[in-house]
Amino acid sequence: MKDIDVDPAPQVGDAAARFSGWRVLALAVVAAALSGPGQTIGVSVFIPHLIASLRLSDPHVAGAYMVGTLLGALAMPRIGTWIDRVGVRRAMTAIGLAFGTALVAMSTVWSLVPLAVGFTLIRMFGQGALMLVSTVAVSHWFERRRGMVMGIMTTAVGLLMSLAPVALNAAIDTWGWRTAWIAAAAVIWVVVPSIARLGMIDRPADVGQVPDGAFGAEGAGGPSAARSMTRRQAFGSAAFWVAMAAVATPSMLLTAVNFHQITLLGEAGFTASEAALMFLPQVVGSTAAGLTFGVLTDRIRGGFVLTAAMVLMAVPLGLVAGLGSLSSVVVYAVLVGAAGGAVFTANAALLPRWFGLAHLGSISGVATFVMVASSSLGPLAMSLARASTGSYGTAAAGFIALPAVVGVAALVVRDPAAEAD
Image 1: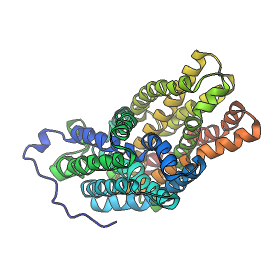
Image 2: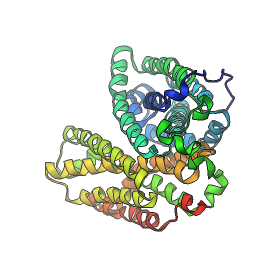
Image 3: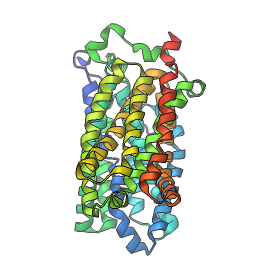
Image 4: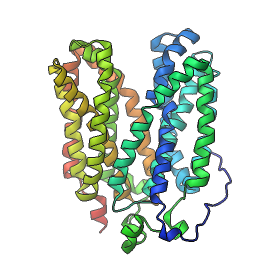
């Protein structure tokens, strides 16, 4: 990816007295939420229009989406390394411009192959790169309170992103689906580069600050900076592969149950409208777990946090076979949301804590690749399991083995930070 030549971040005379981390967090939340048109939650409102206008079948569009998601994921490790090299500010500027261009390209698709190319681009720059650079930006600014901050970020991004399908659907109703893509691109082009150039600062040291501000002043530079690993060194750590498994498992399984939620709850006797409403309790669960696990990650050993998150993932899978009453479905939905909020918050905080900041983009790029790639496989895996077993309840119960294995591994894995001490 070509570097974008921008001026260095403006220096503020009393920057040390006014900690800039909270501003970076707020702006990163907005930037990450604007990845909505490249996320499944945003793309979903375009699917019926793509099927009708391009005269494609539902499986054709779903297949193009899976291919685009996988191809987009392949670029994440290289993009992460590039973010480390050029800095958050320049990277976010370039990613915002590229994502807007990808959205414009989606407005021009006319057949299956261009559609797959368009999906590849919006998944690469939206779901992948823009989320990645936003998370890396915040990670540099917090050390002791990183878990809490990542919990806040996960919750706020989820709440803001839930507005994406509403706004995009309104744009489609007003201007048509092709112009709606262009309108989304215009918003990205205006907002994301502006956030990057006017609000982002690559690292606290660039303006004479330290992570956590005055709260972290005693340990200027922070322990993460001192024990940073390269991506190759991280690959040699058992903790890295446990962390990747803890990303892949919920990415695959949560995407699977959400993708099939209408038919899954249909087996339990709920109508499509009633099943769709069950996405709302997921927001409640995700918010509560994201904030709770963010605080826990700051206070207890990382492996214990991942084990607890895997338990949260296993429980709703075991509940599927017994769904029937409204109360059981609400509990199930809350736990599904909690599993996602827990594990993604924990991983966002643990990667910099375990492997440091110097190569965080490179390492997080691998995690993003794992997350995106595994999410693309979930719906198909659940479909095949359901066809084999005859019900979603039996199929979901069979997948409990995955979080169980990862949870045990997380319980016994050594903390790389402790090994370095």
